[in-house]
Each structure stands twice: as C-alpha cells, then as structure tokens.
Length: 117
Image 1 (cartoon, rainbow, N blue to C red):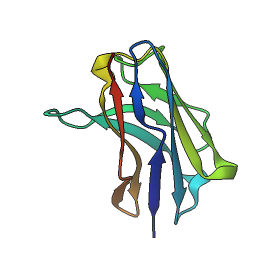
Image 2: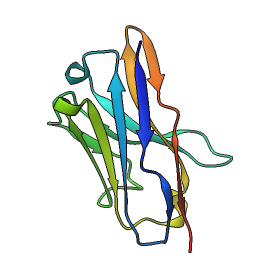
Image 3: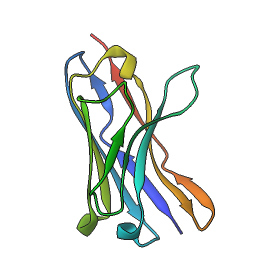
Image 4: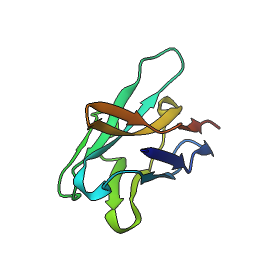
C-alpha cells in the first residue's frame, strides 16, 4: 500500500532553515509528480510546492517563492523541501502528497514546523 513518511520538522528561529524529507513506498515513485502542502492552525490546507515525476518542472506558491526549493531523488524514493529564510507565518504542519494515484490522493502524517524566536 502507498505510504508517505515525512520528517525534518522542528522549531527554528526566524531567518533560519529546515529541510523536510518525504520517503515514499508502495508505488512506482518515478512515475508520479509529488507536492508539499501545509496547514496552519485555523486555516485550510494549502499547496506549497509541486514537482514533476522527473524533477524537470517545479511550481511554488507565491508566499514561498525564492525561499523554498522542492527536489526529489528517484533512486531514494524521496522528495524534499528546503526551506530558507523562514518566517513566523511559515509555521504549520507540512504534508507531502501523492495526487490522483488510481483515483485517490495520499497524504503523509505531517511534520510540524514552528518558526519562533
């Protein structure tokens, strides 16, 4: 079965960096695009970044452009989110997602990112 396991969250000061990882299993990873999403308290979940199946194309939310970088390593069945110049408004639970795999969206369990001094 499909499994997505995120890691790398934590507490960081404003201006700091974190690198999130998502390890996937249960499907042919290099056939599918992947994405990162986040949900802050009291807000709906929003897309942060998307990457194509081969890493050749990426897209970012305006709020993170120039600060976040999505990447993938198909040999390791992994997708990453490098987050630099973090702001308090980046505080959220971050999720990786496999979209529309055999008609179903799959989410990881999430990893908490807190940006605070």
